Amino acid sequence: MKKIVVLLFLTLGATSLSYSQELNTLITGKWFVDSMKVGNEICEFSEGSSWLEFSYEGKYEIMMNAQKEEGSWKLLKEKNELEFDKKSFDENLKIEKITETELLVSAKDEDIIYTMSLKR
Image (cartoon, rainbow, N blue to C red; front, side, top):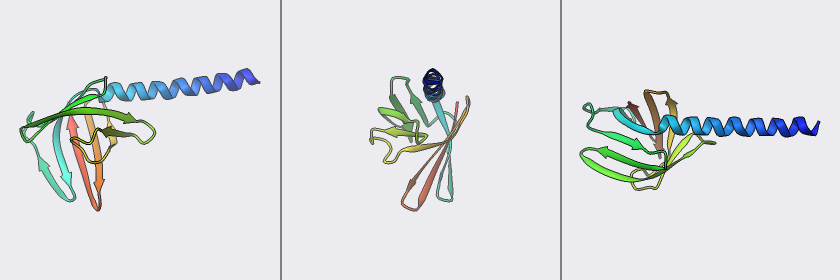
């Protein structure tokens, strides 16, 4: 019986680690900002002008409005959030949706909700 319990915990741990690694792999790479919604206002971006690039080692670069910044990030898998070193973002970004080609993140600052849609 003890062997079964230990095996169950090892399996659950490996599954959790695998999910985290898979999510890190999906996030890693260059994402182009498609649109951003601030409250009820939608901001469109010209194709390729604004982007975020995440490295697997926890570094990022961001280009917004012709200004480039860089810093570090990490995945908070229990909250499904991206945490930054506070240089570019004041709040964590919550991952609302992620696929191979689409990333939707959001953040809340007081009563205003920010949503950013990114594409590969």
